[in-house]
Image (cartoon, one colour):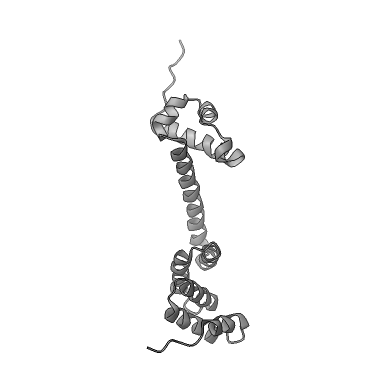
Amino acid sequence: MATPTRRKSADERREDILAVAMERFAQVGYHGTSTEDIAAGAGISQPYLFRLFGTKKALFLACDERACDRVLDAFRRAAENAPGETLEALGRAYYNSGQHERSRVTFEQLLELDPSAHYAHFALGQSLKQLGRRTEARTHLRLAVALSPTSEVYAGALARLGPPKKT
């Protein structure tokens, strides 16, 4: 007599669907992927897929959230080994993608680890400048110049900020 197979829970099915959907969306994009294909790949019916996720957009956003979680986990693991280097790389990525508030927070964390990190003062100054916080930006740019007086990049950034406004 054959042993009965255990039915997967909704959470297990959800994980299966996310795995298939992430692969399909990565291969052919949102518009090139059908929910029928995802359901077939996960071994479920299309109506069950919609019962779990509601819409194709909701499924796509769940995949996006999963991908972001994986990236954050990777950064956290890396930070455990070399926090300064990881924070600097993360801060640069945030700044270059226009996420200046996240960049500011990241460079502040780096400065908590190493208050003499001249690049962190420079980058924090640049982030604060982008956020319209010019007085604070000036302070960090001046610190960057003081810590690395031969850097033309730091001196130039401070000069471009202009003189402090008189109140």
